Amino acid sequence: NGTLLLRKNKLLTEITAGFKYRFAFHDGLLAFRPTAAIGVGYLPKMLDLQASTYLVLKTSGEFLWYTTENYGLIVEIGMFYAPSGSADVNSVTIDPLLLLRAGVTF
Image (cartoon, rainbow, N blue to C red):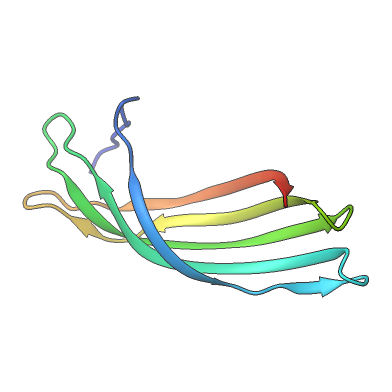
């Protein structure tokens, strides 16, 4: 077992599909959107490790505050996890990672 630090020019690439549902409060000015997604990821060849694919699981909760009809503020907290993956020789797993995001939604 070991730890691999990604080089700046290497990217973890993923494609996921998921579900999101909106719960509205206070006449729609506040909302909560739980999210769950599953997909596949790809890690390119690095150093002595072969390129690999892996299963991606994501879950999060988005909190929204609509300031006007045109935009709102969003804060998201969630988790990214890759419990299994493989290449010809290596196995790939990524421990759960915390996801934090904030911004403006239109």
